[in-house]
Amino acid sequence: MAEEVKLFKTWSSPYGLRAVWALKLKGIEYESIDEDHDNKSPQLLQYNPVHKKIPVLIHNGKPVAESLVIVEYIDETWKQNPILPQDPYECATACFWAKFGDEKVLPSIWRVFIQEGKAQEELLGQAMENLKFLEEQLEGKVFFGGEKIGLVDIALGWIANLTCMLEEISGLKLITQEKFPLLFGWMQNFVCTVFVCLNPKPTERPRQLGGLQALDY
Amino acid sequence: MAEEVILLDHWGSPFGVRVRIALAEKGIKYEYREEDLKNKSDLLLKMNPAHKKIPVLIHNKKPVCESLIAVQYIDEVWKEKCPLLPSHPHERAISRFWADYIDKKVYQLGRTMCATKGEEHEAAKMEFRECLKLLESQLGDKPYFGGDTFGYVDVALVPFYCYFGAYETYGNLSMEAECPKLLAWAKRCVQRESVSRSLPDQKKLMERISDFRKRLGFE
Image (cartoon, rainbow over all chains, first blue to last red; front, side, top):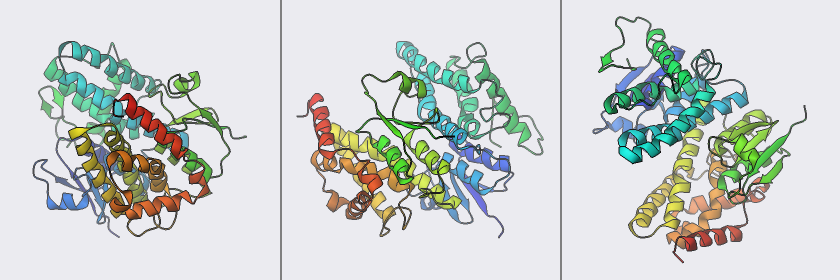
């Protein structure tokens, strides 16, 4: 049967980008449907009545919601270029760090940037501690997945996008080469791989948005 | 190699119960170690430095943290017996979706409902009732969430059966009225030895919740 793959997403959501990266890594053709946060389509509400959010992947008419669930589904359905490790322990470890990113790292970074003064200093400590765990996970590796991008890279890809933007706006540098050399290097590698390697016919350099690189395309 | 399986856990934790149930379903022999949450062991802090929390499954000296990740790990390693996740990718995705929903909603909403007053309590109660309705509708007339056999979503949710008494008492709800199918499902699950032997003592749990509310100044 001819595959029909659609992805409901928005242009900016890091969660939607996870599904994009997973599909691109596998070389899957799909139809992209960009939603408006403030005016969600009836189709989106029908496909994800529980959360009413993007991303939602529709594969041959069947919906899959929640970004990391979608990435695992893509990995289990299309076997080329595996995203998750085969070994159960390594797979569990990857799932752990992806979840850690969502539950600890993202909120702690976000909280730093929306506070000021003494409150910000206190929150900074927590964010730095969380980032240290990620730094340790990169020891001896190019990507969290090893030689290639894996689940954790896809899950944490928002760091490359969002943190740069927040640093640019606030003037506060969180991930520097001095403080987090491996994470800093990973961000460069990830951006390069996602844009250059996954874009089969790069006709232009990554779009510059006030010094940032747009990671969706 | 002889398998060495250790579970760092706490008697009252619904998250620990999930892992206990999964191990029991698969018939895996393991060493249970009770953690004092006010005085965590060096082993726990070493095995789960990121969260410093139970449950932690230690299999041949390697730690697996986070209850649902541990359940999936157990299902994958001991796959010959009692599969918990379905084999088809779309059905697996549906199971993961609902387990994730349960993780994000049930514990926190239930806890907020039982441990707050006034507007915060009412808001949590309203959302909790919606959550029960949704789970009730997802279960439908099936014996278990995945269909005819006990599986992953059942493991994710059934530990919260122990809190039904608290939800009724402190949430001022009737589980029978709110979600009769869910109540029947829970009782069906408890018929399984893996579940009944893994659930904590209900009386002890209610006392613990009552003490907690006293410390908050509610009783």
